[in-house]
View 1 (tube, one colour):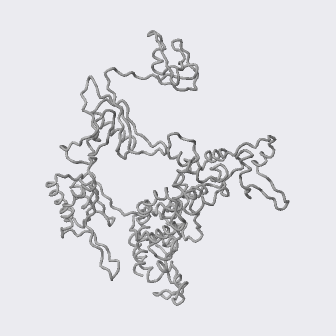
View 2 (spheres, rainbow, N blue to C red):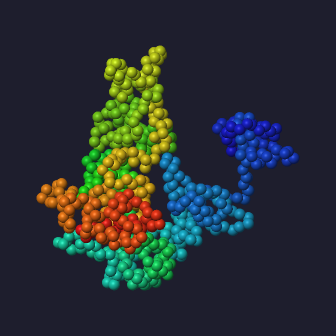
Length: 639
């Protein structure tokens, strides 16, 4: 019987009695007359009692059933619906599925590839297979998941008769040994050109040609022609005949490094059962590499180690040089960290991310004690033992003057937590009600007083007046729970989002120096245009006025003339450099006359297309914008 509280009015029934309390359990015995009309009602909706308890009816199990509780691991990263359906398909041949579900990490609610299942492995009507430790997913996938249950064999065996497949305990080192002959044949094949790097300088030889990359069971081969593709297919067939290995073509992907494809290439891929390919370049390749590969190596270290400010300055400097490639004029790091819909590049700020990573520790400190959380108990005990500052431990998080010198010194673990706490919105303690003893321990801050300098009157806030007017002589005890309760009930705490929190740590961008008036929709359109990274980078610099012309060069080199070198115009600004110069304007006229011969443009129209995304009727404005950006790119290259 399952008993639960219910706020609905009690349904009286003469056939049921209130549950009887026996220790921590409740036992209920119900007797029914089969002729009673309430019999079916009770079986359907349960029985409610006078103490707002309800018995929920459930199906009884047969005596011949053999129930096994499974704990599942190594589940796939799929959606909840697809995950449950695939798990049921894999377990169906081992017994009747009574229940199946996924398990989440209790503290963060993170999916950890684990689940559970309840099976009836004994049935009168069907003969099930013997339950095994490794359960195949389904017919369409070659890997499986693991099941653990009571009374299973101490060691699980891998059936080598079916061959090796994904999910088997084959180490990455063994994969390297198995694939080495195949990789050696590719490297020794002189017909495969591979990928050639540009030389770093005239004095140094260029890096070696890259033909293949491999890690455990994944191989990436660089091909330059259809002939290379056919040679690789021949190598795969020959290697499979010798090693009995088989390539999973359903997972094979083709990536076109130049961002262009053709129906002929797609036809060749489809002929060899390769249906997945990527045919466009990333819009922000360097920012994507910085966020996904470079900075991701730091997140765990930032969570567990307190680092000094000099470290973050060096990281910012290295990221800035990597993103901008040292090209002048430069951008501010604040602009690079803005979202792409606000005119930035979406580059993560290590300082803001460092504060964001500490929020998990702050939640452990301020939430109620969880007896099942070892990390919370250890963290609170550590803070209480080594960072006690004369008052209750957590008061120092709200009032910086209460923090001891040792806890805010460089390299201290507490300094990082304090920095994350200070990153929240400004403190508003006027509504907090605390004991007189707590108030006496708090520092006297100017923020607590509202001074009227003209009338020379000091006005105390509401919390101070409430304590002064308290006639009780009992000062109480120092208690930080009112401040903790205020924090945990605040909107900033309840609606916390890492993305919003990081964005709030970045100073607001000053739009005074921008030559563009793009909206969020315009920026989204700009990043969705299919262009080469070089063209997009040039256009991005043009929108922010970060392109050099004679007028900007003369500012730091007085020996250079500000006149145009082609037409000798006295002042060459960026508009004259790429658009209105008499030697460059015919290029614009020729290109636009072929695309839209029925429209006439002047230099100001081109400037509005480039800087404001001006739109025209009966014109493919996206292609017009791409054409304009490419014309500007080729003019810039030839200058």
